[in-house]
Image (spheres, rainbow, N blue to C red):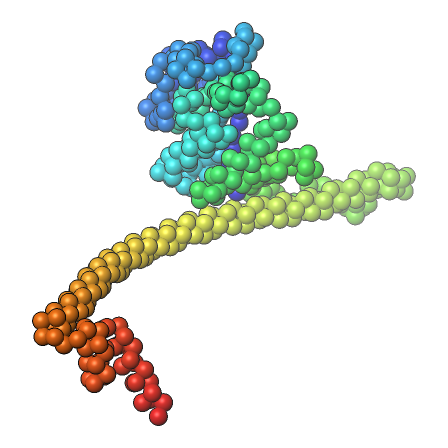
Length: 393
């Protein structure tokens, strides 16, 4: 498993010119022999500085009215170097590599509520052995002055005031990156585990695996061509028996013992080579499984997005239909109300003009004789009660 790597470096004002020329590739020649100038066109910026780092520092400090005393010995800027290993970048490909650095950039903006405005520069280098991001920022803390007013203060010591600041940074960066679906590992410090963590490549380097494999191909498991004691005895006389017993025979036994040790060593080397080869096969299979797993997760996310869109469309259609029915229902209520009001006025008019008594009395007589209620809602309730009574019978 590859590691999520983020390292921090603090800088004084006098350092800004040098790191600007290095990060932005302003030099003609570099002491770092790993830089391949023919590949420098592959570098790209996630944030370009408007000016040199020194001028950019002054511009940001003035524009955002940063508080804090700046002395000659003060650290005024920090630089994160963010990367992983070549195996990780080769596995995820160019598109995901760019997303890795863009995600790391967002992490820096959000970590400790720094804000993008305090980032001087963010440059991805692809012209060295391993892709990596140089991100230079001002260590600004959001605090209050003596009067209780909110201020932004340039203070490197306060930004990194916790004793375990770097451990917190490592943990936060690791958790942020894996939450964005990058398969990475956060290794525990050696002082906690009490042992070294070696990946496959480190193991192969320490055990000199490639050289071991070459040695196994060329090694000859043969006894040296030495005279046998029996042959020598034919030409020996009794006075030479002491030489045979004390010199030649012990040498012959030693040669046989070394031969047996050589056989044992050869078997151990074969087992070691087999273990590493099996580990390589496992690593390849694991990478394929992880790639398939990522593709499956992407398909699941696409299906979820598709169904979410359909669900949203269906919900919108239902809401639209419900709103339409509510409007129609309100309109019908108004019609019924107006109709009821009109009937009452009509009855009152008939009673007055034809001397038929009070309108209420006429309405009660009508409802009693016809068993019809002029109030529509009451009429519906009455019909429902009668219907239920018939069902019960």
